[in-house]
Image (cartoon, rainbow, N blue to C red; front, side):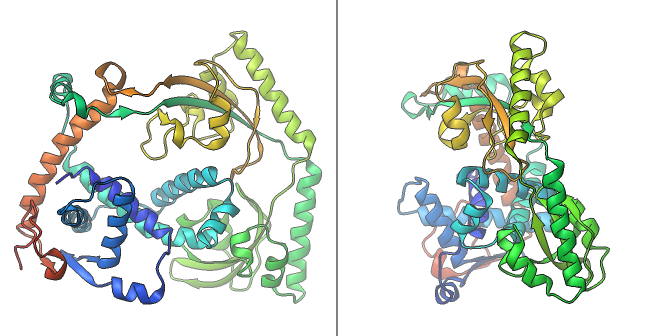
Amino acid sequence: MKFIRIIFISSLIIQAAMHTTLNAQDKVILDEVIAVIGNEVTTKYEFEYQYTGLVGQGMPVRNNTRCLVLEDIFSTKLLLNQSKLDSVEVSDAQVESEMDRRLRYFIAQIGSEQRLEEYHKKPMAQIKDELRESLREQMLIQSIRGQITSDVQATPEEVRNYFNGLPDDSLPLVSAEVEVAHIVINAPMSNAALEDVKGKLREFKKRVQEGEKFSTLAVLYSEDNGSAVKGGEIGFVGKAEVEPEYAAAAFQLKEGQVSPIIKTRYGYHIIQLIERRAKKVNTRHILLKPKNDPSSMEKAKLKLDTIIHRIENKELTFKEAALKYSDDIETKKNGGIITNPSTAASLIPMEELEPSIFFVIDKMAEGEISEPVAMQGQIADPGYHIIRLNKRTEPHKASLELDYQRIKNAALAVKEEEVLEEWIESTLEDTYVKLNGAYTEGCKFQQNWTKNK
């Protein structure tokens, strides 16, 4: 069993939460139970989705392919079950942070939050609701897996032996990759634009207090397209599931009460509490975003021109400038380096770059810095950024010299797989397992999943 597929299968869980491809009748048929591992259930719908996803990613289809996928799913369920038995915790804040990181990546890829909503035919609040628990499960699986393999290491000698043991014709081809860094300067907000937004929100609040429906005003004026169609309603959420400023205001309200104006990274809001239930509240809101005038954008661009000039004159390095000036809090402390959202590595395959970055750095040389580029399709404030191409690798056959870390990770994965296999064998002895023979008949599993058959 290739246990390293666990992380990929877990990522398919996330994708499944963001796509609804079957009608209600299909779901009834496909939700037949295939297996129960401890307290965790595997349904036919889950299996079919993940099997289709793996095949779509290029997994070869052979006689035992369905059985291999089933066993990998059973393994993830065993890990998830153990994480709950061991009371492994993933905080709401961790889930929300990871979800925001992934959604920012998806939004950057597709162009805007509105386009993401249109693609999935769902408002952002619903996308988050469906993604949240699946992501929590993936993080629990990764956490318990990390605990089991925490002592596994690969020495330089083991890495060399692993690489030298690979047949030459099986060495992977590595696509072109780049390491890029950027410095972001948000466009300063004009006082006039800010006061215009605040004035409108104050007027909306007054109209609600005089008897107009908050929901009607949200439909007409809110710039949160996902919730506006529902009268501004975002559904029941806990404190960690929304922006901190939003939560602080919402949880202080009485039912029907409207908040003062609050600011989040999305813009400016007024909030009305609909209902409070235990540690969650259901609210509706109206969001307005101040419009930047051209002069504000020009100021951001000029500031970046000055930063480029100082770097070229060797007054400071790009890394120092990122730390001192960049408005991107996620990258400024790391020299502005943009990491791969899938692997957290600094090298990103060219085909996975945001289009807005790809076309800027495509013809750049290593060490070159771009002219200021307008930021588009971002959640954050509008503005400009400059991009530095730190490193570029050409497509090549994997080698120890160029790809040591990648090969080390592969060698480490093999050792981790061995440890995980031993853990599964041991844990299965004390775990309840029930399989539906209609789906597992003829499968020759590596582990004894059929012990209770």
